[in-house]
Image (tube, rainbow, N blue to C red):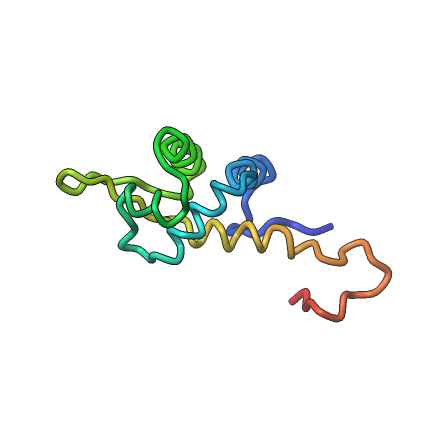
Length: 114
């Protein structure tokens, strides 16, 4: 039986994070913020780059923020959004791949279970 490592999210946390990413627009927003790096983007620039604006963008950012995947911070008259959960996104990928071929009769040749 496989055990979860300290960096592996519990099933409920992983499900909540994947649910937050369960929209093409939210995934596009997070991807854009990851590409922008730790400095992030203003909401206006983020909307321009993703073609998601107004209340729709606000809604998506609220869900991504609640999942702990992005943060928002006021800088003067602007609100800056940045992806903050690089480790969490990596842990989600690990969560999926750690079980690769666990029930298969032979190990998957593409993944090492080490």
